[in-house]
Length: 77
Figure 1 (tube, helix red, strand yellow):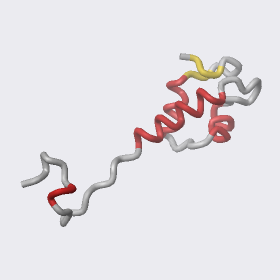
Figure 2 (tube, one colour; figure 1 turned 135 degrees about the horizontal axis):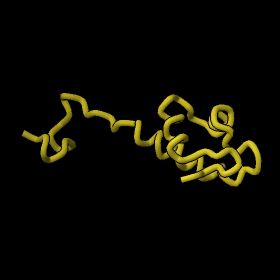
Figure 3 (tube, helix red, strand yellow; figure 1 turned 90 degrees about the vertical axis):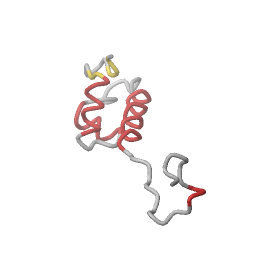
């Protein structure tokens, strides 16, 4: 889907940029031209960027010595 009509940028291009390390709207503006003209796409571009960054963050792991009551039921022995 096109996100930035002015620069012809798609959601897939934004996701790819995020995977390559772009993490801000300014970064998208510099690399892809997103929100460089009318700015109507800025919110959608930021939402895609945020969603992609959330997908790259893994949940924290529990310490090995965690008490059984805080471990998931499938992990308790």
